[in-house]
Image 1 (cartoon, helix red, strand yellow):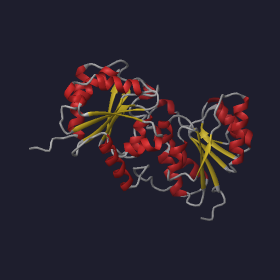
Image 2 (cartoon, helix red, strand yellow):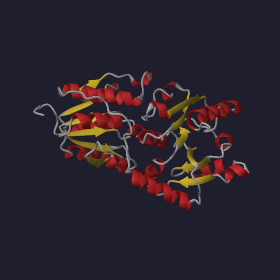
Image 3 (tube, rainbow, N blue to C red):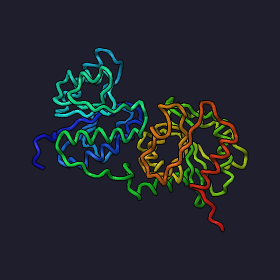
Image 4 (cartoon, rainbow, N blue to C red):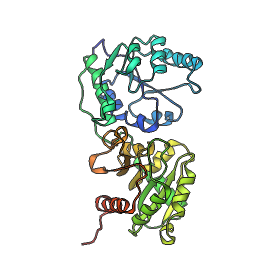
Length: 348
């Protein structure tokens, strides 16, 4: 493609939480499809770097310097982006220290959503008003990528569908077989992953509510419940397991993530169903196009539409829960709808 406006090196930045980063993957995929000869670099924190390294749309990973947000952090970040050699920086969610570092590094063109004082330090801006939450976060990200392609006078391809993260099927089967063997699970159960932790990102049910809900799911003898936890969430997962009845507990297992985010993702890839609140691992399951059930808070900025997962629509089921709401009527209804949608009876 002989278009001198298209950057040879593009720096993309979504350097916040795990879920936020994964919701940028459709935009990354669009850019990759439109710019096959461009080197796409991604600036990410240590936490999401292992996933960035296996993202099919990213060529090179740049690590955001750790530490405080003071002047030393600014200079370290400025050096990283300056050394990237990028002609353009595409920032999906800006913060003032980042805007200053990109400006100070001399990146020639810098595109970001038009946000407060930050926009003064970008050469190009797109007014999005994300706080209105009138479309999914992933769609706002795709809109920004499309705007960049328009600026470069580059044809805008159709957006590819999920999954946006794939593992070799043989590897996934190997991980599943090893998990079943290690957990002494026999037969061919439906592996329902339940993640009661929230990483502090949204309102969530208390452990006793998750335990009641899990007991209802385990009324189906085909279900084997896998209660997962990230670092620092182990106690919550254990509380859920302790709240199960004796017969239900026999068909439940704990799976703490202790081997890194990529190995955790390889396990999520063989889940028959993923259930959690609005948290990063939910969006990991969505990127893998696993069937997901999500519980969202009812506050405007956190609702289901804004933080919709990126799996196929047929694989998504969402509920909105008011802060502290865990009444049995709502839990019973959720369990019933989940069984109807994802665990239907095979009988007549």
